Image (tube, rainbow, N blue to C red; front, side, top):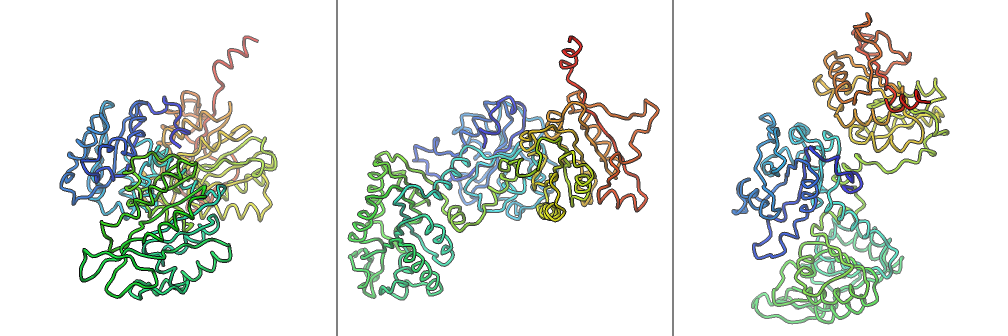
Length: 603
């Protein structure tokens, strides 16, 4: 996404860009020589910095790590890795005004530890507002947090005019897409770890794509129990039995091969140093399984030999493991050989990724995601909040032929269309125009789309989106001319009037001016005079000299339009007029390009 939407580097010059990065790098041991290349946000940060952006970094880190107790020590650490000067910056607190001002381009800035703020995990909008204060563009490069709803990954996207994925985030999204792709067969899933009950929904997703399940770790005992294999009762999670039984039946119905351990390395409870291999059905009471047995590993490796695609998620060992057994390492060796034979392999989870990283032989066609929680949520079919927040900023491409009966007609866009009464009535009256409502409240949009269907309107449509960040990407694809943009009583439900002009970021105004056809109009109105004045000032300031106010006091006319020029009132406008309060209205017109006028005169 970063490449696609910020491909013109000039767009970044002077912009304040906040990068949310994963703090995993701060947990890596000093002996890890790959630490610099492993920093997932490094390329994103360097790209933004080199393009001329003012970069602010934000993350959370473990306060129990004595090496990184203070913000300054983390800044020093990042300075060494990035080879850029990282300066601590105090700027996020609900108890004090933001200090993100006068940033020097030659520095990169680091905000306070997000772990210090309970508002972060509560996704406090007030906290997200403070976090985004002064920020033009938000870049999420913290993929490991994308399954959580946080102020720094979800809430902040409501207040920045552009919200996009960083290089690392985008790369991890492509890995998820690859996991879901089932064209390469046979496709086997090696499934380890525990907590079968909570992860059971994931197997339905995998069953629609895989030809084989290889159960290892604690997961294996639940499947073995469902298959009727004798398993020590202390290893069985009885609440998982019905779900395990359902998965077994589903796999049998779809002819999915199920592999489970036939033997185990076990540790003697009385003598922890004593290890012995037992068949899965013959584990004695004083022995505890700690790893796959040799026969099990041979069977797994044999079954994987012809695979074209493999997903490994979760550890092979058990809770009570033993360092003397190394079956997982042997499995990695087999996967290395398969990767060199053009087998597509995805490794998920810290334990498995560490083992693969330690392997000296190169593994081609291999992808890794360290945080398994994100992938489990994805496999359950759940939408990832961190991804959804970015999706709202960049909706999928619109097929305008499916939206309007005649997509060549001139377009009218209402930003913040609310319950859609204004736009629906305008569409009914003016069949020669197409109407588009952009509204951030998804529930309101669904109601409006229902009304479009029920009323049989062919020239009206609504999109749930944050128009502040998406106006250009949406409207620029429309095949006809943009002839009118309206912003009416922005956010009338907000109690504080100063909140109402927040949608009017410079980027939105510039996008409107750039896309508006010559002689196209901009209609603004509000029931709060201060808001109306601010809107007028913003459009005049950022209108690139192309907007003319169609009425002014200097011509002996009122500063405001006294009547609604369309004869159609929005719901909020009706409410204001019914209580006999004034509306403050204005209309701008876009002038012709000077070069176009000169060319016309020369003819």
